[in-house]
Image 1: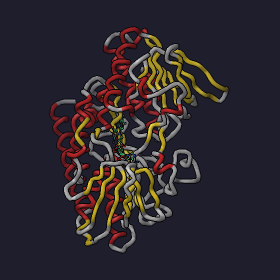
Image 2 (image 1 turned 45 degrees about the horizontal axis):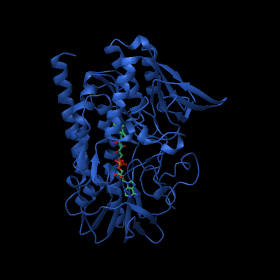
Image 3 (image 1 turned 90 degrees about the vertical axis):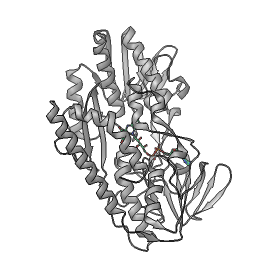
Image 4 (image 1 turned 120 degrees about the horizontal axis):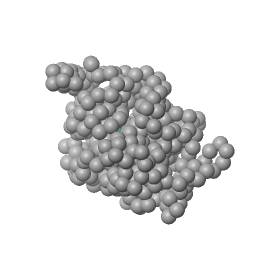
Length: 434
Ligand SMILES: Cc1cc2nc3c(=O)[nH]c(=O)nc-3n(C[C@H](O)[C@H](O)[C@H](O)COP(=O)(O)OP(=O)(O)OC[C@H]3O[C@@H](n4cnc5c(N)ncnc54)[C@H](O)[C@@H]3O)c2cc1C
């Protein structure tokens, strides 16, 4: 790409960003007067941005944000930490910095939600009654679903896991460096459950392949991806494109193999298959634990009880309005939502606009006004310096939004978005600006 093309794409991106910001502010212009008490459970990407949006849209309401975490992790940056490009400190900020003004922050987690009594009880025993509730707890990594594995094992015996947090992401890079050094068997895995940033395990596979090539070590390492599913990505066109790129790069794929155990001292991974359990020796393994709703939702009347999403206990919201299906005064935002797709910060950004506007409408005595289309986005890193900007909706339709950026084409520009633009965009979202 020449300098003129890069400038053109940059200009188009800035026009797109300005248009998005205008759309967000258009959705939030009307202010609702109310003395209602709104409790938001979870102070992550969704909880903080919902607090900021509701603060802007409601006049006179009391908003309480519940969450014990003292640090805010910019999770999309974990992939760059695991790629050896960013330091863990670059993705961590004090939580207090992002709590919007005029919001009451209770630095405790919720232990119980009773949507009939309209009450949340904190871990410390404090009881908070609400008029309206926003559930934004994110999700939980089910480490216990893999026998012999625990988060403390990340960074030893060849085990990596980008999902484990900033230090685990750095340890993942160290484990990748070891296999680059020694060569051997690299296994990368994908669980059977919905997961946040479903692109991250694929990105880590591309990154390892590129690292091996750059260090001249590709020949001595076999790289194989083990998917629990018959695909590696839920959107068919993206799945085909990734498999095509992996064929070209000699990355093997094994389908319908679920990681169920690790024997770290022997460096053996145990997979369940249709034919029974199989053992695979590894030099490096990237573990992606199954994911589920935190128990405060999973074990509450708010969880989905039927269908494929019941196993994870996800929040039972209408996928369009993001309002709870049984409890009309409850809305959901973020990874906790039991919607067909969309566990990304990009989803939080677009769906937060819908959830906040709909909640404000309900508080004003109206029906929800906006419908969420399932927008999900993921810059699919395909090597150091290149990515594909993939955006799609609930139906798996590609929805490219930046003029001139083709979704299934690798480009430096998509990489630039991942590396330079997403972090400021994320923090603008926390402020409720976009
Ligand atoms: C490795 C990785 C790469 C990613 N890459 C991308 C990417 O490239 N692009 C993208 O858009 N997204 C990406 N994401 C996904 C994105 O970070 C999440 O989708 C987003 O953070 C979801 O926001 P959330 O608020 O729902 O959950 P979180 O941000 O996880 O926040 C949930 C909060 O709720 C709190 N909580 C949990 N239980 C309770 C309780 N009982 N009471 C109170 N609080 C509770 C948690 O402590 C946490 O603070 C990535 C994520 C990871 C892990």
